[in-house]
Image (cartoon, rainbow, N blue to C red; front, side, top):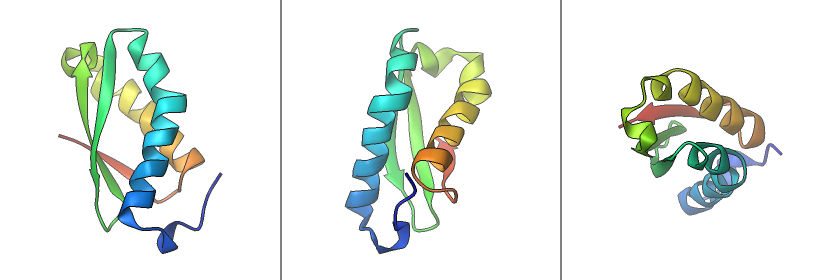
Length: 86
């Protein structure tokens, strides 16, 4: 579902990212007692996130989980997106 990304406002971009997270990412993380908070998106298409719950202290969050999130965003939203964990 790659959209015309560059013409979207920051709010529209964040809204789409929130929707994809709610559908594809959060249900899986919540099964394990964790979640991700979307903090911001920069002009260079970097999405800032923060892990919450069990994910905040899980060693796998910065490896497999981060890779999974990156893959979901680049395939469902836009291929230029990258993730920054705060």
